[in-house]
Image 1: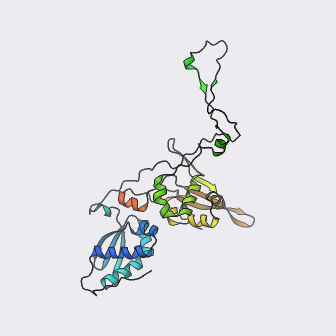
Image 2: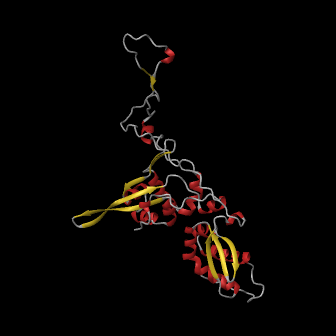
Image 3: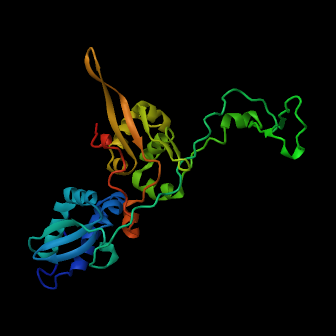
Length: 304
């Protein structure tokens, strides 16, 4: 993986800063998966090369730390091969680098994406309903001794009913709203397992952006999530500890209880993000940076 690019000219006609960075990107693109490259490397931008220090800008501290820890040594070796001398690779946080100017850029907070889920009315009865017309008109009689009301002011009660046994089983009013953005942009980055686990977790929550009601913290077990997502418990554990998932979608903490035999685990508390964040690349290109921490403080730092 760490194959240095040899400098064919041995000090003559050394590459310019931009050309050298393009060569580094080409090497990393060859060695990394597309999802990792587009998430962490593609948003980086060349800042400067002075005093044998090659500096690039990352869009936030999280991206800076990821590149330094996982790619710093490899990039330094590539640059040393290009320049035929020791080179220090440095990453800084520079949210405004993609604007093309040297002035400070004020980054606007991300706007709220469209609703992700449309949870059905919780008062729908599960009792079998025989096929009947969709709505039945029921007149509410007036009290005795009361003058007949104007027919135009009569009140009617509309009762929802399924038109067939098939519709009663399907319950078409109960659905999950999936944005095209989530499907087209996040699925390639997350993979199918993480994609389905996130959808399963969201199906356990409730969000009504009109009233502001939000229930996105649930008490559950990994086995329950695995059953809903049709994956293994091991897969759920891997997804919940995935960096992208933890940063943008799901946070959890293990519930522990004291028993006669000591401390035992009793499932997990899960906080679920119900709206779709922008991908790291879209944050950089649009200038709409997501919040560093969208979750509650008690959901920081849990790993299993």
